[in-house]
Length: 115
Image 1 (tube, helix red, strand yellow):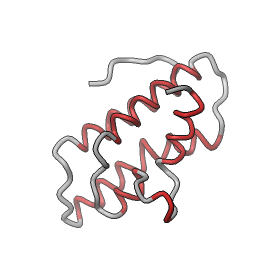
Image 2 (cartoon, helix red, strand yellow):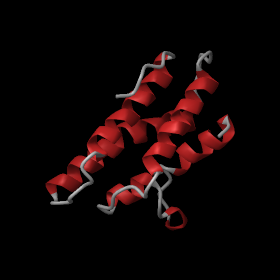
Image 3 (cartoon, helix red, strand yellow):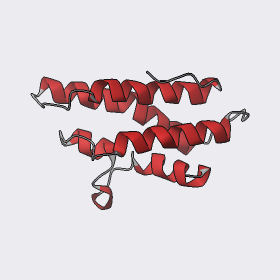
């Protein structure tokens, strides 16, 4: 995966429209778990974006907003779903925390191992 592909993939995970029904935000809003491999692909894309931006001093506004949504909005949707009785996959909370950590690493410019 190259930077442009990773960038577009991360943006698409947050775009809410009917044509993008497998976007992570849409699935979580609907109380559905991620599709198989989706979290792994997001984490890979985050790592690729990190590598592409590690020496950057500014981040594109569209990407920054997508990163915010992937790190904060996903956890809000997870919590809201749980309160409504959604039975999320056992490791989803930890996966969402890994996404948030990877996003933090992009902003800090220093990658650490994801646990």
